Length: 133
Image 1 (cartoon, rainbow, N blue to C red):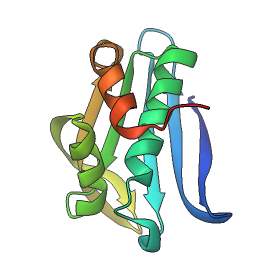
Image 2: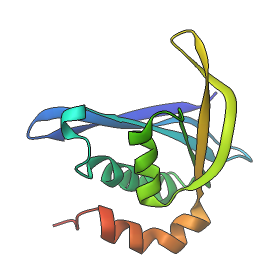
Image 3: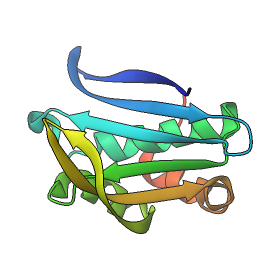
Image 4: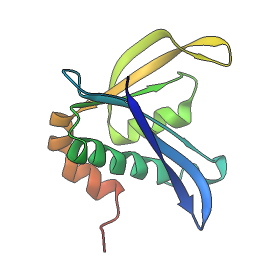
């Protein structure tokens, strides 16, 4: 069984969203799923791409995982925009992938491997994550 953790995203001391790592699988697989949400008031300001990149850095560099997956309901254009901005690879549609509110929903699956992270690390951090003081 995998483990998970979530981190709140705060803007001006207000909870604006969350990014989380779920279903961490070790052994031969070495992967996890990432999920995220943001309050509509804070959407479109770059907070979520920044949060996802920071979490990717943690997952690959601190946890030592090999692969991260993100699954998004096709009609969720805002969530899809996050992975598009980051250039995370589209792996296609998983039919009836997750049950949400009693309905089995298709999901577009995106993924990035540690090799892709290593190639793109500098670019992603420079574009999306503020330098540490």
